[in-house]
Image (tube, rainbow, N blue to C red):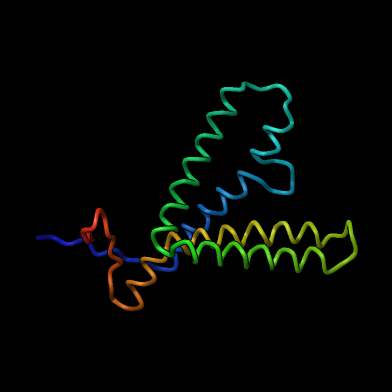
Length: 145
């Protein structure tokens, strides 16, 4: 029987990180060129195209969050989100109001959330590479590889 041996390298992690950065920054970014800004601007444009883009983003988030949730669990996701928020908050509010630090804080938040998604998507590969153990799933009381 042939077995599939995945080769997880730094390049594959960087690709996953780039996909998660694309997802997060396509949804919102401080430059004003994002899905959120496009929908809230309300200007001319087909509503059906905006809805289709929103459904595509929502589908991508569901896939990324589900994979991350099954890999690192709720505690891992919440830990990543809390650290992202705290790093962003510490940077954004360490200077005077309306400073460049608020903008940098937004980027730190977005990049760290994308990093948390990338780590969540890659966690099973990290675990297998470090320990040699495969992650097992329990479906309806039965253990499934």
